[in-house]
Length: 60
Image (cartoon, rainbow, N blue to C red):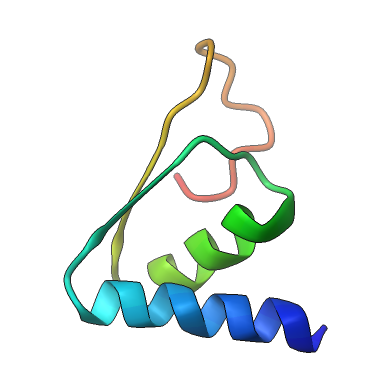
């Protein structure tokens, strides 16, 4: 739980700097937690998927 919170804070810091967060993740793991943090900080997140299936994609 604390781990996810720290990752979300990292995402918020990325958003605060005005950086774009580019990931290849869906809705699991480290990059998901960081992406959710960036989105909560009104940051721009871009997820690259190997196909057009967006099921489970948390940062739309």
